[in-house]
Length: 297
Image (cartoon, rainbow, N blue to C red; front, side):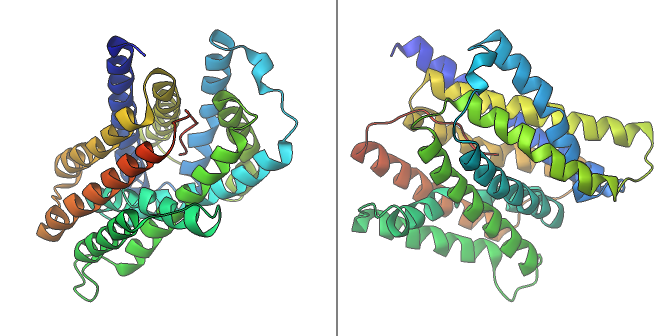
């Protein structure tokens, strides 16, 4: 793999993270204007379908959507939608920087699930990283301090746990399915239940609010596709560390749009969580030959 291709993959990953951070800010803005979580989820997926379809048509071809594992895709959709509910819920309930920091626990949960569900060998190095990461979470959350709701912290950690489950599902699906196939079926299968829920929760909005809802879907869809494409261009160990740039965007958007900066506890705990996550990724890279997969959410 050439260095130019790796640099392109890293650049694409940084672009994807910027898109998803912008989507998170848009979610918070549009919720403040009266949009419900169901509406936000519906518009997020509504715009994903044409984007994914166009991406497949231009790239690998629409024939790649054929699958013999529709049941596995349905299972991925159920967990994926539930994860989106908790992820978007955490964004609404918490300051952007804190919600983003809690998402950095995904590698920690993935390590635990890998040991318990897949019976993967996890050495003491990674268990120490897991314990260190959760110590960082306690610093950020400050149980009993009341600087932001523990309910929101629980929602954010649940979202990270579900994303870790999705990562395991995608590893299993990736044995037979292309990344574009899993993205397509998740987008398509998630729309019917969201439309039914949306039909009971339609609300009148002004043009600005509808524009923000549309932007949430478009930017989020572009970000998801860019995440997937980055893994085709560079190794996981090269691109995944770029995910932590989302904290920079979350801090910037929190300050610009909501006049909120991360608490001192977040500045202290976030580097601990990030370091543990990076160490887990590095140890995993040393243990296994990498294989590109679709990234969730």
